[in-house]
Image (cartoon, rainbow, N blue to C red; front, top):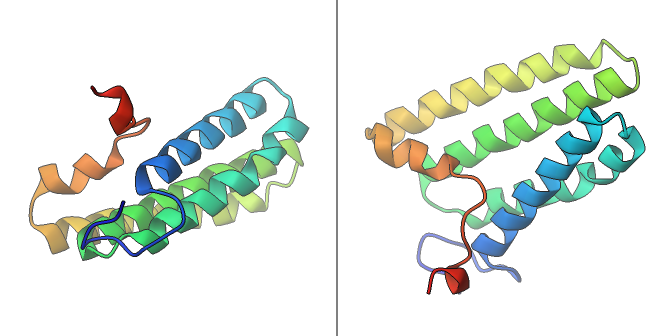
Length: 133
């Protein structure tokens, strides 16, 4: 179900956020364990769900936070690929994503004018609503 702050989408924001968190977790876990091929498998769902979350949100400050999170996803992905493929040049792009992410966080802070509201959107592994009852 969507609200006025969200664009309509075939999956709920909570489902996408949980899927993104799980995919990202496994992408990083397999990289850490040295199982690079398995980690590569999780790049696509992590990136796609991150982009979908970016599309759904209409509030400017939250959109900027989602831009920062997508930069974080790309930074992490490029770092993983750089390490796994022995391609140190990719670290340059990962660092660019880091800088862009910091910029978007600062832009969100300026837009929202409220640090608590801004950083509340960084929660990972949100509890699905059906588990809260």
